[in-house]
Image (tube, rainbow, N blue to C red; front, side):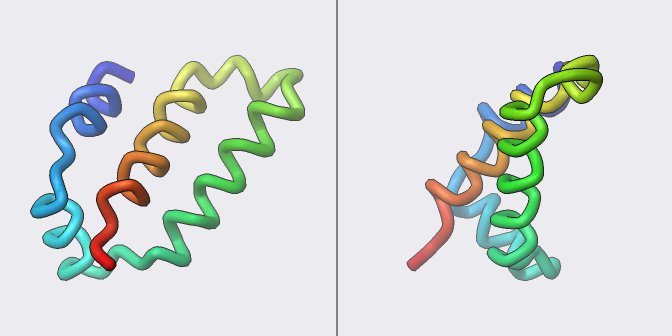
Length: 68
């Protein structure tokens, strides 16, 4: 969890551009974001995964920095 938070806080547009150059697709980021949002909304056993809100935040931050 701490690593996900550190990565999210350290993200920059340059970092996102590098991730894109290494194969990250917007489609994949959007898909992951949908999955994390759904899991958080459904609750139940999925909420035992303490990474969910942090991974959701990471995907949101990547999209905020996604180049036009």
